[in-house]
Image: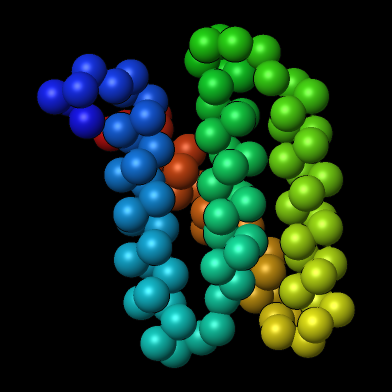
Length: 105
């Protein structure tokens, strides 16, 4: 990413996605966690960090991400593919990993 001079936030986000994917793969060996919720939590975390670091002000996008996260979580529950704890754990894991990776990588 440095060779094409991409913004640092993009390379940190991609690194966070890799870390979240590997973490989810390890957790799924012992316990089922929602990968959809990890992705939605990561997108929400990205938008919150963009707002906090004041790159721009996507407050309406944050609300949309939370709304879409609820839709995805509801669909996973309705299809009986996950229980509520698996979805919440996935969302929190995705949010935390992306947030930490952008702030510290």
